[in-house]
Length: 269
Image 1 (cartoon, rainbow, N blue to C red):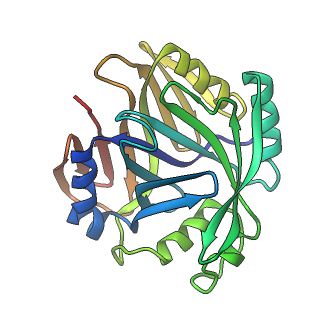
Image 2 (cartoon, helix red, strand yellow):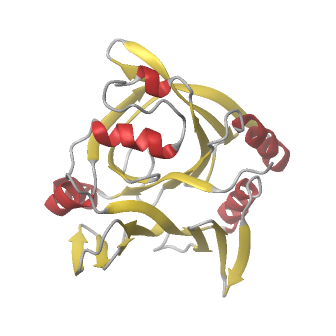
């Protein structure tokens, strides 16, 4: 059975001004979503980012550095069928030449707990675009802050319930989920993305010069990059309730709220 194309999370690297503005935004911190400013230290890597948690998806911002220059972007696909990551890795080996499938652990005090199974093509990026899939480990929620929620499964909703429970944030957050992402990509990145997506159940269509992929309530648009546009250009979020209309400037990015829809647009020049 082919897995549906599910989004785990999306990230974008931004300039220092935009990162600082997002970090210091009272609206994002107090109204938008449970959030963290966190440095993740894995045995293979360390990086600092801003995280906002929704119901089944979340979004991240990184300041230029460990994750690349402004415009560098990434998307993690979600796998919620136990063991299905192995089939995804096999499909990517066939489509992309090589792929790895391994376990990622997460520090907890002086220990490390199993976090998620990852699959990614090798090399794991094409240009400034990173793509991979995540399947949470069956023991993660039993090992990582288990007293905060009763959940012990591997679904995104169960994981994000736990993340929200241990994060600062509003009692009644606005963010429900990311429902659309638009990326500006080079021709090589576009092919790279489409070969990844082909491992999942996804519909594709052309809208002008752009390719649009959809699965369930998720839509991903791929447009052509140029000198001033690269990576994630727009993230559309569904909100849990109507939030009126307003426009917020977050450094070189803009958040537009219109009822139960939020659009976050990015620029680097």
